[in-house]
Structure formats: structure tokens, C-alpha cells
Image (cartoon, rainbow, N blue to C red; front, side):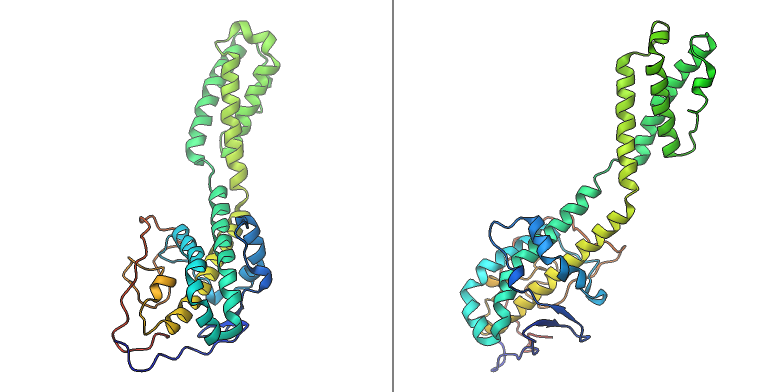
Length: 310
């Protein structure tokens, strides 16, 4: 059982979140609040300023959580917390409404940031594509060289299409070779096993390689997408945990705070406990955990007599 007195929360500025290092980020305001019909794209635009303003010290780049599950839980909490909303407003005042009303927007913004990065990373593997381009090129160049040897094609037409030192060079050599066959088709069609369908397939391979190279060249855009996702997810965790701390305070004696704002770490060694995001080892990308999402269940009332707010 908790002690005879409810734990005292950390003082909260009505307009800002406060952190241990005294740095601040803006609270959601009335322009950030969500409507049930709001799209993920609109939510990201609505919260972009707050996402970009998040201080570096607050960005959690490696968090052992499933982002899709976390955003879903955050959106769901907006409805479940309605029962205790009057008590929250009575205790914490003006900051409660914009925090609750803006949470779903932040959740949708984080989900959209994740979607945009996933779309950007959908390019085919370049090494595998290069093998296919190379194999296609080798078949065509053998036939082209045979045509040259038999006098049906001038040797100089192939001179500029033998650069195989790079992805781009191989691609340009294949596309150039296809163009040679097409331009000379009336002269060589009767003397080569290459068919129009072969040229179409070769062009398709080249087009896929070209698209993959184009996506890879947008490295700066990918880096920006990674940063936006990390910031959006960090902002969501900040807002969600702030709301959870408030609910824990007003429902401390009842012990049912997880029913309203369940811990995002249920099933990960943090059942019902109040703690920050769990770090994991690795690079700087936010972890999208492959573990099967768990259904949150109410956790036990803290029984160590310690404070609910750290």
C-alpha cells in the first residue's frame, strides 16, 4: 500500500514541459489539437514546429519500443483518460486540456514520420540489381560484338558503352547498348538472336536500376526523414509520459492509473513501473522493435512506499 500521503508531483509550468536539465519544449496549443478525421500528413504538419524545436538532449534515438503500437496506445489514451479529465484539470489546471487534445495529433505525426521514412527506404538492393544489369549487358554485348565481327554493325557504335567500373557506368553502358540495337534494328534484326522482347526486358532492368540509384542519391533527404522520425517519436513519449504522471498522481490511491494511461513498457520488464524510455545498443536510428506487440494490462500499485514522481 502507498504511504498515507499522496506523492507530490514535480511543479509544472502551465505552458511548457520541464526536464531535469531545465531545458524546455513547447506544450501543445489549441492549433495542435486533433480532430477524429485528421490525416497523418496534416498531423505531421501541425506538429512540425514543435518537432523541429525539440532540444538535442531530449531526442531519444534508440528506444526499445514498437512505434506503431506506441502511437496506437497514445491515441487510445485520449479517449480512456476522459473519465479522469475533470480531476486532472482540477489539480493541474490550464495545461491539461491542450496536452490531452494534442496527444492524438502528436501520435499521428510520429506515425506519418515513420511511414515517410519507410517509403524512402523501399528501394531495391543495389548489389542484386547490379548483378541483373550486368548479366543483361553481357548477353547483349556478346551479340553486338558478333554483329560487329560479321560486318553488320560498325565497331565505333559500341565504343562508348563498355564502362563497367561503377553502378552508374554499367547502367549507362546497358542503356546505350539498348539504344544501339534499336537505332540499328532494321539493319541487324535478321542477323541476331536478340528479339524486341529482349530489349524491352533489358530496358525494364535498366529503369529499375536507375530508380534505385536516384533514391540512393537522395541521402540528405533520408537523413532528414530519420531525424524527423526520431524527434516526432521523442516528442510523443514526452507528452505521453507527462500525461501518465498526472494520471498516476490523481489515481494513486485507487491504483488503477494503468487503466487510463497504460505504460508503454508493459511486457518489457517495466510492468506498471514509472520510468523513462529503455535505451538499447546500436546506431542512431530509432528502433522499430520486431517483437510482437503486447496488449497493455493494468500493473500493480507501487508497494515500495517511494514517490511516484522522479
